[in-house]
Length: 220
Image (cartoon, rainbow, N blue to C red; front, side):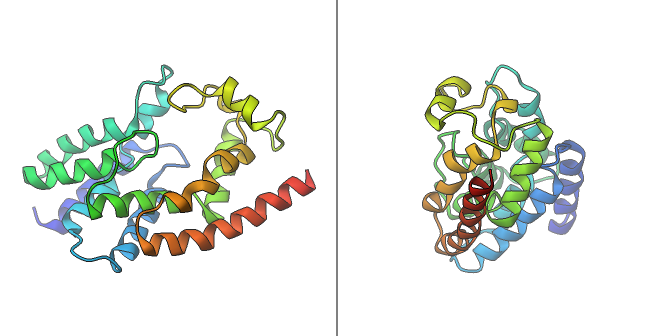
């Protein structure tokens, strides 16, 4: 199977697996395109690692969403699932391990720091899709799904102490809000990016988001 057909097969598998609107195939394709954009400004990027990693990075999202125990981490589980998928479409073991590292390290809370340029690019691309105009839209899509309020009913500190677990996972999504998501997570994203191009894009996107949420607070 040639590289193009492998990518098509991966896309078919991903489309079957991802059913939630915030982390669906649209998100995967946006992250893939951001990866390609960032990679243009970096040296020695292995696209045979980066592209499959981008396409498979959220393959275990549905499993995490269905887990009520808070123990399933889609980045860790996804790296294992990806290994099996890649083996079945004839990727060699060295590539598989590099792709798996990208997937396992693309998330903040997992604690696996990206070590390779491909992993850093994927991390950055995934985070960029959470901010800017798309980030606002995605945040409110999730907010609507969970029946969240627009307003902050308690202080951020009170919320964090009552509605997040030790690993930072939200206990009750209906008590969360887009404003809380922005204040505790999204506005910090540009400072956590690795590549210069991603930082440049992130700075532009977070400016819009900051203005939006300031205006939302004023109107509320």
